[in-house]
Picture (cartoon, rainbow, N blue to C red):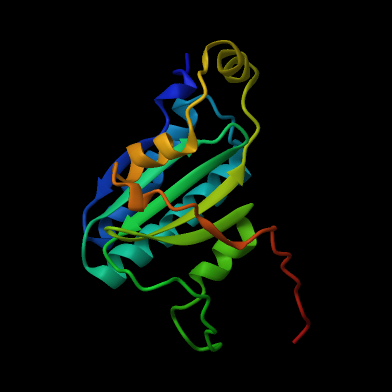
Length: 183
């Protein structure tokens, strides 16, 4: 049986090694399932890919641990990755021969919404996926969930300092469409 939704948010630290990324992806998927979300194969793959991109970027570029926070907003699954680098996130243009530089384009293409915000630790980059709750979880949520103000949910994930509670700024507000072009 799944656990009640009020357990969200849920956070864990990822060590500063690329080898830790697969375990972080699996933990995020496990958490989503434990709170009662039906992911399906495609959403599971998207969730793993997006989580892996953000966590790998964080540990690769900072050479430091990051914190991953997972929470259910009532309509979407939100995954946040906080690291020590205060540099704002921007989409970069990768050339056809570059081995890196396409991860955020994948996030923009697959996430319902995503963005970045400054915080006292550095920055938090996040994405959201629309996930239909299971019938059992929806019933549990409707009957037992108490409303938690967004400020409290953010504080429990990123710390209680008021300057951390800035509202996230969306970078992309809608799912991007990928179009294939003939060579």
